[in-house]
Amino acid sequence: MRFLRLISSSAAFSLRKSFYNKQWFLPFTQGPSSSAGDVEMREFVEYIDSLKNYEKSGVPKGAGTDSDDGFDLGRMRRLMGRLGNPDSRFKALHIAGTKGKGSTAAFLVNILNAEGYAVGCYTSPHILSIRERILVGNPAKPVPAEKLNCLFHQIKDILDESIVLENGRLSHFEVLTAVAFRLFAQENVDMAVIEAGLGGARDATNVISSSGLLASVITTIGEEHMDALGGSLESIAMAKSGIIKHSRPLVLGGPFVPQIERILRDKASVMNSPVVLASGAGNRSVIKSICFVDSRPCQFCDVVFEVERDLQLSSNLLDVKMSMLGDHQLQNAVTATCAALCLRHMGWTITDRSIRAGLECTHLLGRSQFLTFTEAEALGLPGAAVLLDGAHTKESARALVDTIKMAFPDAPLALVVAMARDKDHAAFAKEFLSGARLEVVVLTEVNIAGGIARTTPSTLLRDCWIQESERMGIAVLHDKMPEYQESFGDGSECSLIGMEDRVILTAADSSLADALHAANRILKRKARKGPALHVVTGSLHMVTSVLLSLRG
Image (cartoon, rainbow, N blue to C red; front, side):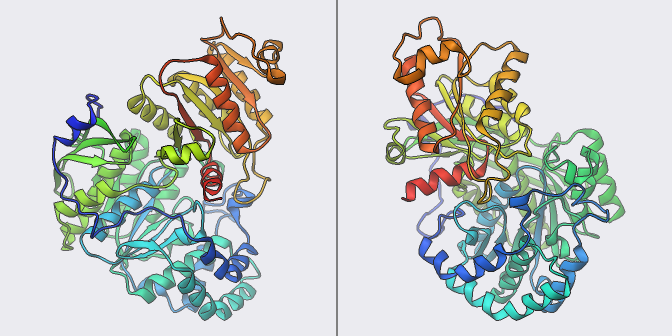
């Protein structure tokens, strides 16, 4: 896939008139949800928060592998049995992968809703409310607090009994997965889109049987959670291949390196599962142009491909206007389209019109999310372009850099970053230092999953960025240098002449608002021409912090 050209908003709109009618179809947004509703279900939230939560504590080494320390899928199956096996009462699309799961799920949910199907969707993590993880209906919206609270009280005795029988080992994710599956069965959804939490083979969502599975989707294979999934890309691929079920289609997103694709295809062969490769030679999908609507960028794409191996599928959708930006999101859209076409191949009604509508209306909080000028002004950044993105791996950082270069090729860039301890900070920094027009980087801190245990101190992040810049030979001015103190200490207004080509690095252990203001102040001091772009990234919890501040 290639980006071809940049055109104006008026020229872009002349390409076509979308038939998508916002009166009858609402976009998948994952929130935000009402704080009043969360208060209503406080007992449920406190209940599951009392359980082991690996999002807060970090995932143990080997947890997603076939080892004594691994997650126990048998425990999850026993819980399903006590709840009446709700997983057997709906059909499911099961999605695993290192990156792209949530976006692919969002595209699929909107395609299915556009066709008229009532859909359940289970994803993680959430941004503002735990209800965002469980969507239901047409349009698929976060489960109402009243409904979730009612269901919890219906099954609480069973959950209590199960926790005792399992010696207190049931986790936050296992119980929430069980609640979601019970809700989908109770609501009699036409089908559910299920995102695996970690890995695949031992993930709690993998209680889905071959008889209940419509298709498996594996988006990408990367290095995140390597220790938990066996220590190598090959072991990660093996773990994620565990969602492949007998005789059910497998959609591969990709692209994958040859040995990883071979592992996935070999597992599919053993399971007699037809394979659809969404990133093969037949994929001629392309980003044709970028335009701005209400100050926010969107991309016009052709979603064009032919799949001839195992299943014969094809798409010829031209000038699809996507709010989800970047080549990686176009690939996620192609992957979702392949999954939708697999459903069509099985006899489900899926029209090209619904595929187009679903792709066009999809957007997600914290994934290339541009704030409005009103929201930027509320953050103390009047007139600024502000981008929120939860990128936290080198792959997602590279995708974010590519998106920035595509949509804002000449904009000076101010970066505000906070990250969890278990991420590859150096690899993340390298992508931005080598690929973006960086002017200032402010390293800060944010609570991870409601606590500070997994948060990286801002000073450690700063030192990592300093070391990486030195290794790459990039000139920086950081807050441990006397020059920095002379230029920025105690409200100094000294001239920055001679420092125009140096990246400013500083650590801020105060609030996120202070970090944003520091970045803006430094950027103004450098007096770059043209509008600047402020990017908040490094963790979805950073996105949560910004959005919560906007809610007041």
